[in-house]
Image (tube, rainbow, N blue to C red; front, side, top):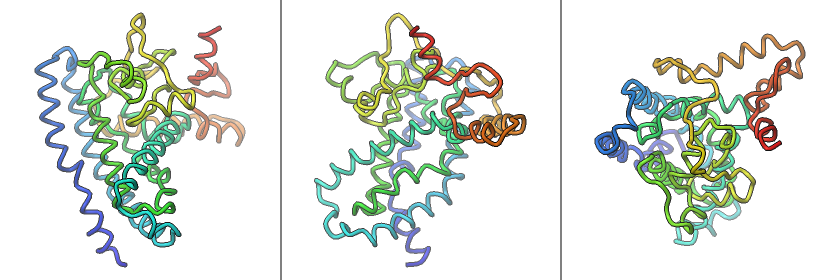
Length: 298
């Protein structure tokens, strides 16, 4: 198989490309319905710009990942067992969502990964436009978390289509128009209420609700937090940035990591600045989310 064959197969995954113009229309509709959610036009411009930059940055990693998935699928002993039957799609839905949960969670708990994800959290607004503010750098390591699926017999195109479906769903949880759904839905699915928590900088909410479609993963692995009526989510970062330069928004945390690594005195501390969660410091107060939450509970 040559590169042209990989590209031909990958080109069949068009879901998000088709959906993008629809996303832009829905952003405009939401802005008309809820103007309070769009108080900063420049911020929305940054979000749309980052979605386009992400698509360009992701192109080569996406092709390499797709080719790798195809190779791994070829050597899978389950290749001829798991085909495109209905049950295989259903099983893949859960396995893909499980992969997304850990990918997303690690983006918050490993600072190097956080540097690639942080642009998505840098907006002070919560709206459908914010959903387009994708993490640019995270595209470089994203597909590592799905490498196990082709080994289970799922073909590359199936996996990529399911990843797209998952992201399509997540677009709609970035809004304040919807309050809360009935309790059974809130218990099982990621909802706007749960995702508002995820985008909040309140200590109570930090690094919680990493779900893609199913919130059950957060409930199972101890990262769930409910949106409380007595504490409204405050969107943005614990230390917000003021720039509207898309390039700066996409890369500022990499620069911050480099500065911390340079001032660290030991190799152990240098590595901790790269691989520990954001907020760790060798010479200052530990402001990692789990530490701050423990102090709050006390």
